[in-house]
Image (tube, rainbow, N blue to C red; front, side, top):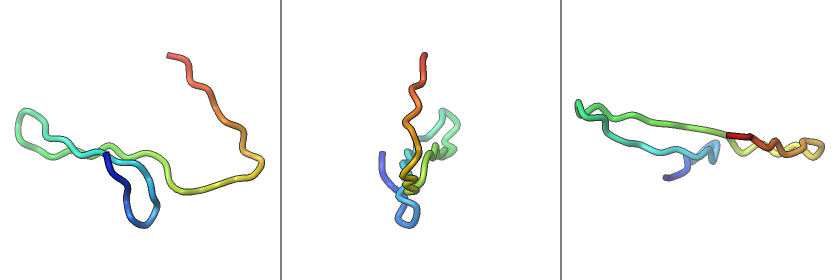
Length: 42
């Protein structure tokens, strides 16, 4: 895992069996003072 420089979003790169590079990206560096954490249930 790594972070993008501008947004500080988390990302990971991986190769599928065909050799294609894929990226999964989430989040950015936004802070909201009144934002409550969200708990995800799996």
